[in-house]
Image 1: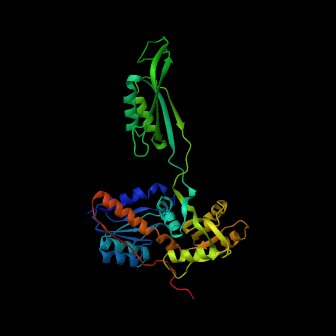
Image 2: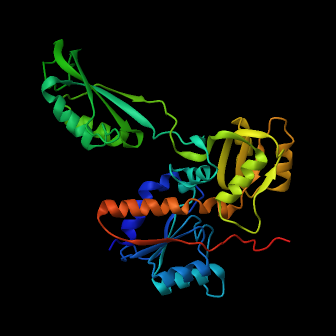
Length: 376
């Protein structure tokens, strides 16, 4: 039976915590990392009802989108909401893990799930996150020592590209130098001009590993003063980032699109709202799960026909729609938009469990934790 740490490790691999916004609080908030888990419950929020459901299922872990302890908590009292939930989790031996803005930005996360509910294809991030910053190190080493230096640099983190490691480019040439007084040359003598057949060696490395790689280069290189260059490589767009932009396979009116989306997400009391002309024909759509009025201008700058998000406020939406080039707005209840990710997260768990050769049960909670319960 897998442990809490094993399962959360699988989820961290799919939704790296490094993608989370600086203000966020993701990861394991409650529970014993070493505890065995036979069943996992997926939910948007941790509420009293969700904890009760997990206990009835015999779940040892609740995976949520929203963090339980996002803001500072200074007491754990059972007469207060957060304290009551934390106490119940501990009493039942249930751990709690959250993947929030990291799941928003990761591939196959919240944004992709909402885009799928919208029926979009050809997806790209609305606000891309660049690829990991990379350097290239170039050095020059006598032929006989080239492979040893490659091994040393690879051991320090250079030369890893996708599913390959120890990746390097080599070329041959001639190096020349003259040792001065005080030098202790490996090859040649003080005062004499030397020419040495050398291998030019190039390897790519994560910028965060630069210090380790250069230390390995100096330690493994036979020369007293090895020559090397460090080049900072330009970043590339990635499939990671907040929101998604896509297109509908066939154009629809805004009204028809909103009705189609209403059928694709769980029903809530608030329902889906449309801002703009219901008869406008739309094809390109931007989506952002949760609260998205902070990226209204980003969606407008992207030139899309429609922006799907949630928690839109009166004045920002009104002012936005007054622009002639504004896309129509579709406001999806916060909980309903983010619920679409839960089945995807469950699939991540089950694929990882199958790859590891273990079995773990899982359930996607259907409890509606949207705060609005009726509309009159």
